Length: 75
Image (cartoon, rainbow, N blue to C red; front, side, top):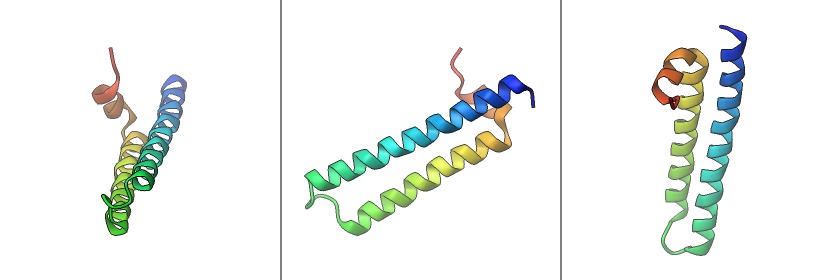
């Protein structure tokens, strides 16, 4: 892997981690503001789903960075 691709990969991983944090924060805020609309078990399912989603994206990026950027990189 070339140095430029490695830098892009590291930056993208940090961005994905930040997006995951934003999603978790939004879920917590929604849950706090609407306590009767989201049961605790539903919130846990969503937390688990988000974890799988972002972990999967990071794994894909780490294992196939060229393919990842072919799919997601804007021209």
